[in-house]
Amino acid sequence: MRRRARTSAALIALSVAALTAPPTAAYAAQPSAAPAAPTATCTVSAADAADRVTVAGQGFAQGRAALSSPRGGTTSFNVPDGGAFQIGSKPDDRYAVTQGGRTTVCTGGTKAATTPGTTYKAGLIAGWDAVRANCGARPPASADKPFSDGWNKGASVAEDVFCG
Image (cartoon, rainbow, N blue to C red):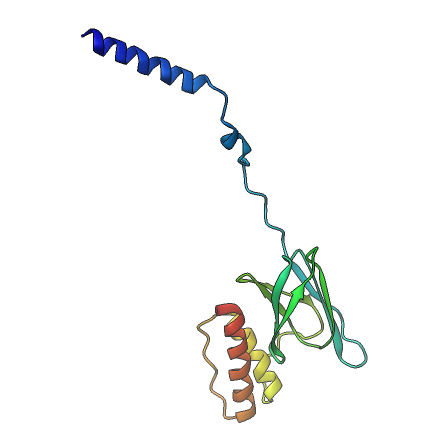
């Protein structure tokens, strides 16, 4: 009986000491909350007389990123230290930047969403827009081969970028 009383008293004393002791150095060094990730933004300038634009971004992590557009496909580039970049002399189009599995759609530029038409370019943009909005999008029925070919190309690039 005495042994049980001494053991219980010792456990109570250790518990009280543990609860009233200051935090350990390892615990105190841990941050209370993770820092918020920077918000990446991307813009496309208005086209110049040669129908060229500048794509600019900020808030990205330093390292590799991919710039994609419906007509131009996807190209890789390096984001410098500081997270801001500027890429000039690109064809006037809509752009998106993908980095670390996250895609940022660029705002601005003069290319507006296009309703389906009968040209390759209209099909390309319509395919890009459809798959960007819904990864399960299917091409509309069209007797116009250039539009269908453009739709399939735009949808393919958008699927790589947004649905990957």
